[in-house]
Figure 1 (cartoon, rainbow, N blue to C red):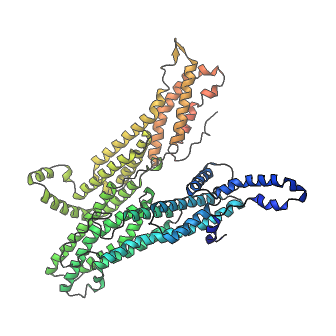
Figure 2 (figure 1 turned 90 degrees about the vertical axis):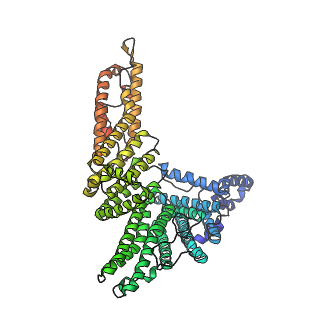
Figure 3 (figure 1 turned 90 degrees about the horizontal axis):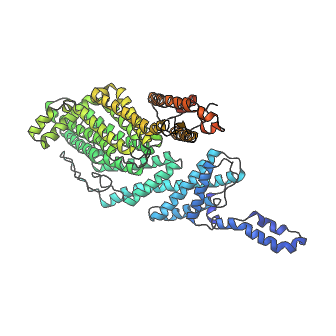
Length: 622
């Protein structure tokens, strides 16, 4: 394998053509043809010579074509195209340049570099998947892999540098936070940055854009764990510094039992201030930053893992302190501090739960989930609610307290009395919160369904997500009791409506082409019209099979119900049409050209639908 550092000088040189080595081996009696041979050699070397002189956009375009050919070509690749051959050296030169200048200084250069890294990563991944037995290809793959690793190492370094830079700037500018924790009031944070309550540690928009590009490039290149490790390490240090600046280091759980009550009261006041600061500022800020750096739909597990890992240790520490305080010797004067701590935890719970609503509202991805499958947001929300229901009694008390406090301040008494008579209000406070989350999720999924151009796939998407939600509710006694039977029946009705909408959009036109209208001319069956009708049916059925066999219905029961309902709708109609009119075509030539399917074939084709696999027409009976 060549050293990555040697590539930079090669990229500017013309790649020698094999025929150049032959020019000096001509025999003397061939001298009269030397001029002619030189002309041929010059002509032969022109394409490869030109490949080394291509501009970066031209090379990128050639690499795009190369990547596309790796996916579409059926012939094993024997050699790398001339225009793509010097690409590793081109990227290596870009790496050397970026090592000198660094990312974040010129947006266009950053984008060009990251685009180049993305392309070489895709090329490496595709070639490894093909596992080709070709020396030229293997040589190129080794060079490209070495350059890719060097490029990603640089991206990782820049990623950490950009993350750490905001912390260093914050130190220079001062944190601007009031360190007096003697009162329970929280400092009003700076209203700038990624979140409306984010601390003063902010990231410039250009840094955010670069972080997002680097994260995407590293993950696509197969370096997800390295990217996450760099992010988690940097943010853990930043979070630790934030907590240290607001006095978290002064709280020692082990000393709680030995500290005099007068001194412990000050520690409790600090604890209350810090917990409020974390729940209202730090935690939402971290969620916002993580969602901005890892915005893609398939990054959802990464976001959850990083945020949970960051805040779990801090949260456990807070809870350990509160538990230690509760275990101190009981006395009447401690009651009010205990209540202060209880209220603080309640405020934190309400704030954190409110972030679930915000995450649903702000999940506005513009790329539909492939094949109409269950959206990651649906899975996350339902799993979150399932776990939250394990604490439903505690959460109900918390929400009831803060709901009452909020309405007492904002709602006139007559309206409040009228609201308390409503049926919805008679449910628990936590149940009302659950219903509000479900309504937000429904509205979000309805918007996401509009991303699908095909109305039938839109219905499948809503069916998949609706079914997932319904099964989660039925599978959890706590959620089912909170949501109530009326809500569950309404959800089942909506699923049936999506089912009917799918049938109408997909199979309505198929059924129309099997009616009798337009088949008779002067009271006799028109063979021309009949052949055209069978041809239309074949084309429509083939297209549905080709398209919808790639769609996904993950719930086996719903998948079976869909197939059964389609068979019940289509097979009798086709069998009747086939039995009535096939005899009018049998007498002619090329019958199979028009009558492609026997009635028995239809069910086999329907059984291919919603498997998420490319269609295969091999099941047709002859």
